[in-house]
Figure (spheres, rainbow, N blue to C red):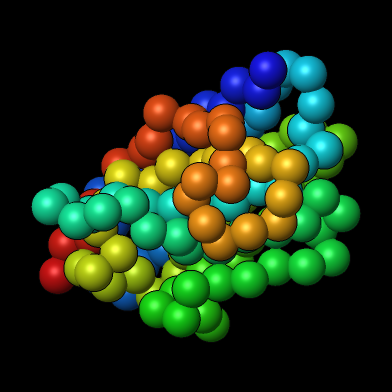
Length: 121
């Protein structure tokens, strides 16, 4: 089992920044880690993924150049640095752990409870 706890969400003005953290505990942290988000009235969507060794990352087009995913395996923590935020980034952000590096939600079997990010315009 892997337990995931997100933190760092909040209210920020457009153009501002936030850094989300996801602390993992349990059996192993040696998994691909990803961030997904769900805006009000919309389905959950992929945001970013990072490989076990942090050598490979991938982002959805809408956040490329603005968001950065990283991880510290010594601290069992994955981060999402979000810059130049806009109203369209408002959502609940979830971190997820899975055995396979993927952008597909169904590939992830461990999920955090989510943290709210609200961007005011």
